[in-house]
Length: 118
Figure (cartoon, one colour):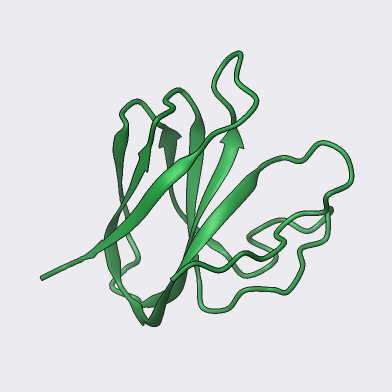
């Protein structure tokens, strides 16, 4: 399911913006796949068991309870990130856009999919 929550202060430039999925009641995901038309942007993948209502500008994602699982540059329209949760289930998985592609002002994410071990 999709939830739209404010994860950063809207005043001035931000260090990033993100979208998260709710994998209720939780899943120990082994990969997360992002589908997008744009390539060349940088993503960080996080997991958490709860989501703060608001994230203050000076609060890092890790301070807010998010655990970083992967990061990298999106080089394909369907980019897969391998995740190591240590076998631990998490309810929320966040795709954090930390850097836009050169000469671009936005990124569109068409789909986010989680995969668990079978």
